[in-house]
Amino acid sequence: MDFELQGSDYIELNNLLKITGMCESGGQAKMVISDGAVLVDGYTETRKRCKIRKGQTVTFNGQSVTVIQR
Picture (tube, rainbow, N blue to C red):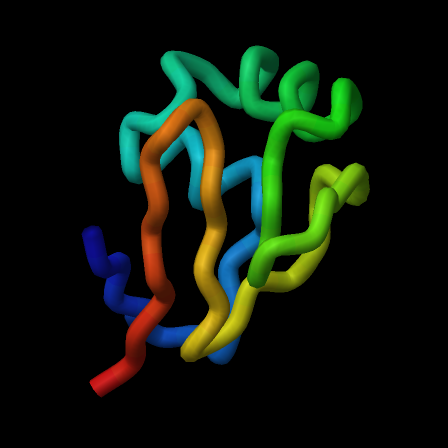
């Protein structure tokens, strides 16, 4: 799945998980990030507000989303 950035150069990781539906809420997103269950470009990411930029891929629970910008 692709996620298109609009009006910014980045999106915070916890917001990306919530907006894309990979997590049901922001609270759940923060919890799974803290637990080390989220990968960014293949590496475990535990910073909830990590800036995800164009070209990066986030993976959680068997789903992946790549950030794009047109």
